[in-house]
Image (cartoon, rainbow, N blue to C red; front, side, top):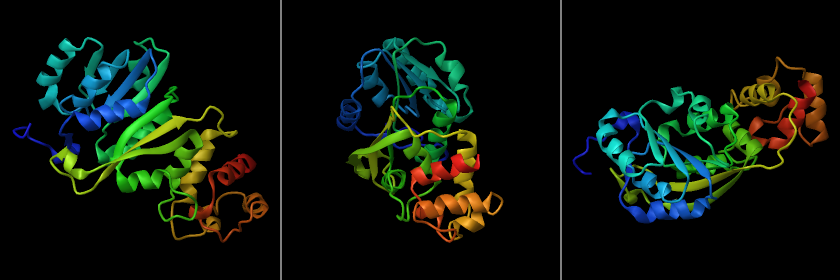
Length: 263
């Protein structure tokens, strides 16, 4: 593995051995008849373990230098399929139509620099991913599960907590990777909520939340000045907030109330 030409532009950091991989698969609690989507399989260390525990694995790998080795792995593990393309540009809905499954999971040691775009693509797809288990930078994991008032609380925190119950599974030391990254990691689980809060218009909700966090230092009034300020103020006041509050202090449920009142 040391001879491999690691590419910084693809955020490549490969796990050294199987003990972390085995723990990821075990903690994922994968049911029978599950299709797993993996992004950035690298040398396929996680892919191999997944193939032993699931019905099918669909992997997306952008680095064509890995193609020869991964094709050999695909021939050995017949329930594994590799697509050599950019996951963010893929037609995920079309790709998954070729499979039959009862459960859909996303399990991956994702390239850190595209963690948020990957999650946004999964949410935008509207596909029934029951669980997402992924390795992320420790600080990113903290952002995803941050509480209102915490400096890490952001629009992605709101989006994820609207859809998922978020749980930290375990920490991973940076020395578990080749090459060694500059940060430690953690494996997190995002389990789809069986009963998420009612939102009249999800597209409007997403836009409202993004606008609310557009300028972090500005008040909610300034960030949402193009919305119905009177209705906004009424919802905020009903929940103990004012127009001078900042988005980072406002809980997910209040954002949902604002969205429903304004949409």
